Length: 87
Image (cartoon, rainbow, N blue to C red; front, top):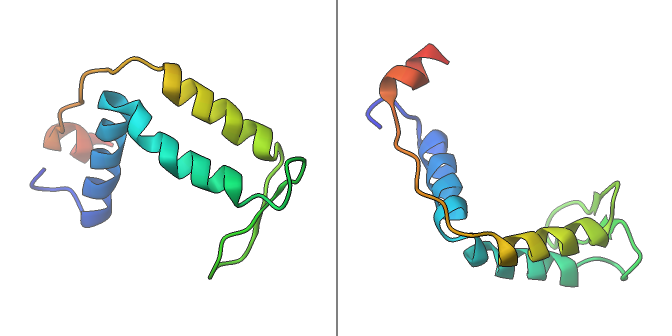
């Protein structure tokens, strides 16, 4: 990862964590679910930031939580500077 920027490294590490341990993201999704204005609301309150108005509302977050809980682990990806340069 010699050629990767700081943000690319963070995104790549997060992607690999999602692949290898999908359940580790469930607490983040559960926190977001708790921050919706109401169970039927599309408004996600983000304290210290502007609220986020979603198209699908809380149901999409519940669906994501269920998918993360049922997703099997996958192998981590390996960084390739050559592919990064080609992109």
